Length: 152
Picture 1 (cartoon, rainbow, N blue to C red):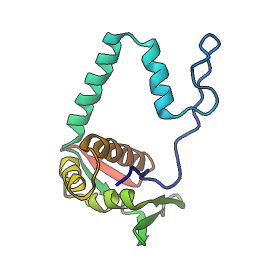
Picture 2: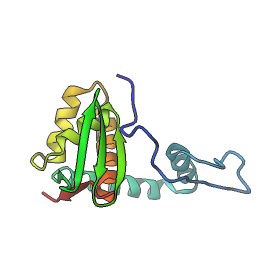
Picture 3: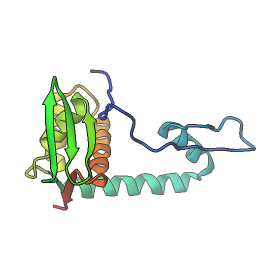
Picture 4: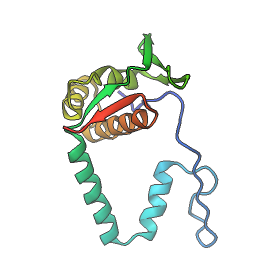
């Protein structure tokens, strides 16, 4: 299975990175990968290792967290894609098939570790990529008020 974004539309804010001295730096609308590459170019190896250790520590602590849908969120699934409506804000959100599988697993019972294991069995993708997408979706939906996350 090829990698698909879990959210149909790219909901990330526009990010720009400008540099006068480095023409190879991304300009205009930079992708996350371009920003990460630009950051690696200016960080020392020790700083990069510290960031990676922090990322791994955060990931381990999140694995025991349990995501639950906000009771003010209604959703419907059609042809494998889900539309969510936050009744409190009136905002709609669309999830593709992968995002739908992740959303459906966030029932308030399984931990992110259990959800990750289920998704790894269902999708033919590297476990790290599934974890990255799962954390990104859960974080985004939590920030939007669609999910609550209880630390395990």
